[in-house]
Image (tube, rainbow, N blue to C red):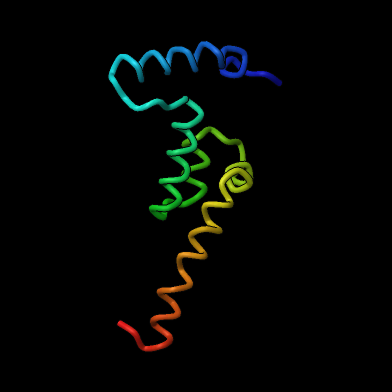
Length: 90
């Protein structure tokens, strides 16, 4: 079922693009803003359920399917600090 946002996405994108231009902000699409929000929120440790609700996803699984790569990268980033602790490094 198509909602009002989906039907009017072009208008949302154009309105957003006009605001970005008017305020002299770097180029960013509305979709890019949503992506940035979700990615930064995950990296800051916000709970996926909270992010999912904020983005209007009906299920947290939707959010996790779309942004799992962020958590995978975070997992990779965790390896060095854990290794340092286990090896006695400060």
